[in-house]
Length: 454
Image (tube, rainbow, N blue to C red; front, side, top):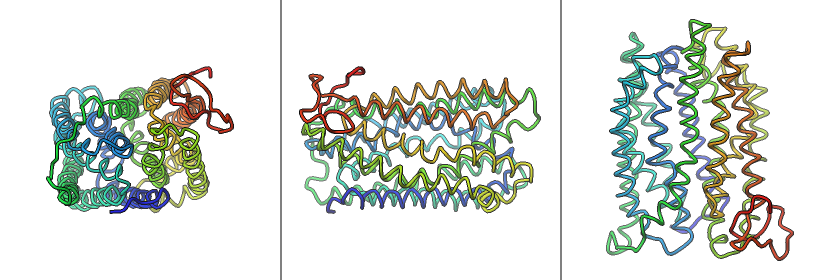
């Protein structure tokens, strides 16, 4: 298929991502009704460990593989990535199964253990799906990514409603059934992704031609992205343990409060962020060839364009989230009690700014990768993740904010992340540390190196 333009590719992935998140948000309506606040808390407490392992085995792959393929000369990168990350994904699945009981003990919820075991096979299948997405993104074809994201969510919603509804009289079993639906969706989506990839590669004979792409080349881009992405779930895992345990000292419904924050408020906030994901993904094949060819003026011009588009789209969403938070709470989570619903409205309004900052972090991180500096995004994510956990714990423990303190902490940390990424993009230099000959580009030089004081 012919490579799509930047805006067309961005629209395709954005629509797919938005439909996927919208399905996920709609899914929360019956899910909250079946599981209640406590069940949602358990459901969300499973995800931090899952996301950590998923990040190690999959999260850096689409952008990293896309960067390699789009820059030219690495057309077989995805083939080796199947072996490398398939193996890593399998190890991740085994680790999640093994550490299910210790995680449940640390979080003080015995039901978490079974949920982790049921979810563990997903780590392997998502790794394979991610390689396929990266392959097509590198070719400038965003349709497979959008299709697999929507298919993944649609299967999860269908299976989740059926299974959770079947066990709705028992919170523990209903929660475990909803988690099992995630694994079912990843297995089916992996089959779809494999069919798309094999269909595309069959047009080139032989089906698997041997390319001289080293594992080092693949890891050079995927590993920094992996460490970048792992910061968020690692922080969420630490946050879920610290916040829930601190809350238990003052309230009886600590798990339910965390479920409303993580399972309800964050779900609503992530809807607009999913729209701008397309801008981040589509920017990689657009910026990478320019950066690889040494045209950093052009590359940064494209980066600036992606960031401006992101801000233009996300700011109206943030305003809408603040204004229509009560409507969103009533429509998406009608089964919540009045007190829980009011808490949700407050959380969404406080975090509405995250629709902008989180979107900008997402796009700016992709720009740094496209410019050949993925490690800078890693620094940003880890610094802000550590700050967020410490600040969340302090606000919950030493102020009357309770769970609202976690929302305030998230706002502060995403803002810091945006500032850091913007500074990195501005200060990127060429390998010799020389500034642009023209020195007029607002985002710095056309070089590839990094000088923190330049």
